[in-house]
Image 1 (spheres, helix red, strand yellow):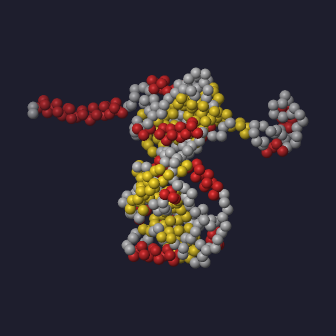
Image 2 (image 1 turned 120 degrees about the vertical axis):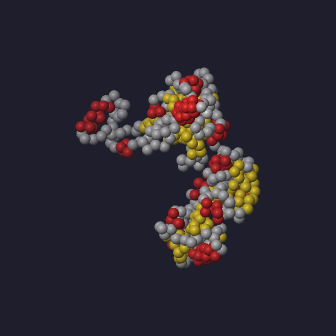
Image 3 (image 1 turned 180 degrees about the vertical axis):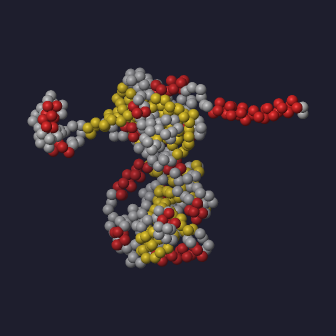
Length: 495
């Protein structure tokens, strides 16, 4: 290689990193402008004004009576108020309506006047007004609302068809995709912000079906109920919540995915209420220790911690301790996947469940009930008063960092344990240095089973733990119930 070629090669190598740093930002900068997209969708985004009227009297209504023509709104109201002020008294308050208002956002999905917003925007409002992008105000009728996914369906009667937008497939949204949020922040009116999908399937513990799209597009108070668009102008989410220590946007906003709300919207339009599928089981997460104890091979599925006696899973043969690993052909990776799938499945459908029991897979067929019916039954049962019953003599033992006693009348009364809790031993103390304390076991809970075998005396627990140790087992799987009878699994080391 000649000296000239060597110099040229060195020049290329030296400049290559510089060229890379110039090229990379150009590839990542995103769209040059969002003006066309904004113009395309903005007329379909509306402002929502919700007014709540409270006609209750205030506490001062019990004060002295006023003569006719005196009081709020009367011709000489100001004079009488000054009279009472000078006497050191407040103006006696007459019956009056209290009004409170809230502002939010929404969007039109049908030109005939169907509008979508968040349930929390309208809440218990007596009057709901939809304000179009051109300033026109239309009185809205609430067709239906659902608190669980925080969505409401409104209907207005416009003089001419409205600009509408359609839902897109939110499952196709990928982290890093550009998105556009449109709404009414702080009541300022139509505003557009842009960002990207920061994360998917976020759980913020706001409800049973959390699977939010997280975005850094600015979302503030008043943006609630507004749409989150993809670059095709499709609604992939409803802006619902923010995470913020200050109350303002810090770049962490959450939108309910379109694929979660669409089926609910269809039900609200058709029936005015939701009709969700119901299995009739209580479930909990599975950690590594529980997975190992149940011979699952991997941490997966939803652990059945309770079976409703009046639910559809009881006749299908599901039992406490079963692990649901498939629902209607779909794998259950973690417990929170199951409620979303069940709720989205039609009531009355025969669904195939794959469960792991004693380390082996079994298939069960369950005819889904209706969740709302199950909730009504649970609420009615919860009103029944329980009578205490006698059981045990109160002898106690210590094991696994727990102080255990037989279930007696005195302990049942002390810890308000319902008589629906049959058998078991009462936890009367927890060693704060133990693994049991880390797993948040508490005094007043009842230990029902050890490794899926019932216990009724502290001596039973000691015996079973000794057997596990002798068999070389490292973990004991406990079923523990609170005073109301709600049970959950806890895995504790036997050493």
